Length: 394
Image (cartoon, rainbow, N blue to C red; front, side, top):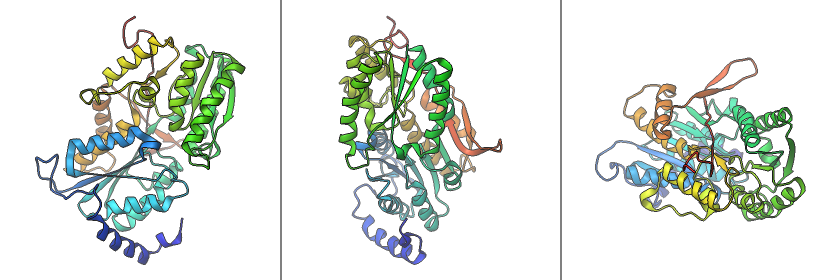
């Protein structure tokens, strides 16, 4: 990170600049309203990717703005976040410069989140910070945030392969790239996927894909998936399960899964809203936004009608969207004094269960010495396989 962000004097200058710019930022509303009806004394900031990098999270942030009005401030990190960390830092500090803003929820907490939080803590050590889907080293980033929420990478290493096996997979193709494979949760999951595939007698294939934040961009990565999936299925047969570690690859992968008759056990970030509606040509009317059962039924029917019954699956809970909603609701309860703990696991679990509509279990990131990181909370879910009668009776 550039040294100018590490020097207190430079931080002060940047903050003064941000204060001057805040009044011109359309996303930063005047304090004092909650959905236009009630007075409130605090704001909550949400940082997400752009629509091109993470449409689900972006739209959930907007939904929180619709629900809570001026209480919610929304900003984004850049598409090229790995090489533009200073922009992530500046955007988060812009929110934190508002003294009425008392909490920040960031999903996904991509590379650069840790540096951004460090700079916010210099200016606002009291800020409540909740990070979803963190990409940086667990032991390091857990000391920066109050709560971290993510899927259980260790359990997923088993359950993804179990799901693929149950769907008839004989080969499993894992698409990724160097930047993702350096992320501990992804590399740990990959090792377990390989081990579980060997146990089940499933051939495991590692496929190199372009990094969407590299020279070819998102478009190049998506085009590669569109072209390479048919090659892999032609080589290994239709009982090939396809998986990738990047969100932008999901929609073309689902389309080609249906086109080639292959198997798609789950997205990198499980959710019925993640890429499935787009790949299936579904639109969501305003009155059905947020209605998970409705979208599950629409996907189920579309998968069945396209002859892909039993070949497409996901989790019934939109995890990254849930992390944003849970982060906001937890922040409100904390700031209103319903809990005094910065990481009240029982409360965050209750909020997630209310959002998911099912009982959930949270585990903690394990360390080599047998202990765990107590504020690093991991969630796992059962699967829904579309077109098989699990959603709509057949």
